[in-house]
Image (cartoon, helix red, strand yellow):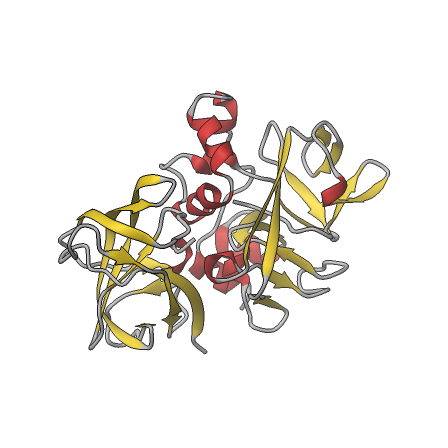
Length: 313
């Protein structure tokens, strides 16, 4: 069954841009991954759609510069879709949340390619999540910097930082819902799409050669016990430690916030989520606030989407 994602667009072709000063309005529509391979491309047998039309070209890393009232000029990196019988549509891949703006300039690539669906949009929990702490559990929204949280590898560790951001629960920011029991969790759990869950056991060993692996929540969707829950607003909360850690939430293990992904060399999908949700943290890291945080290693291997499909087979 096809998977649909709602995303934000400008109606613009950076390769054939409008006049400077043209007003660009935000337009929301669906991207359809018809064969569920996690990629939007132009192959005829893929059948991928944008705004209900067949995709004829995918121009990754086009840029547009726009002027936003009260902000100034902003350059946005994204992907342009050419759609049969329709105008070209541009959507960010750098985490930018679009708003009405006036066009300034553009640059464009010269080779059509493909794009992973995860690049439209950090590891975050939501309010109401019970986190394991020494002696029991606490609601995540009650935690403060300096509080001790239980970790899988290093026991009780103090929180370095906890941040919260509210966004519209749509497109790449729609949370993933794990129903009670989906991964052995005691109660339902909501996390951001790029939040990596710890998978253990024979499937991890058989398909990846590791006893434990990390899998982004988005790659575990099964449209039944694990599904997207769009609509309304969602508050995302991250837990940052001095190291990347595995913590227990709602009775299952998943990752803490991984700030190294704010670096442009890291995973693009997760990096885009971080830049969009926590720009102040990204600015602090880029300014050299803590070099150790920028270079911390990933606590477990991460597997790719097709490998995650094998785990669920």
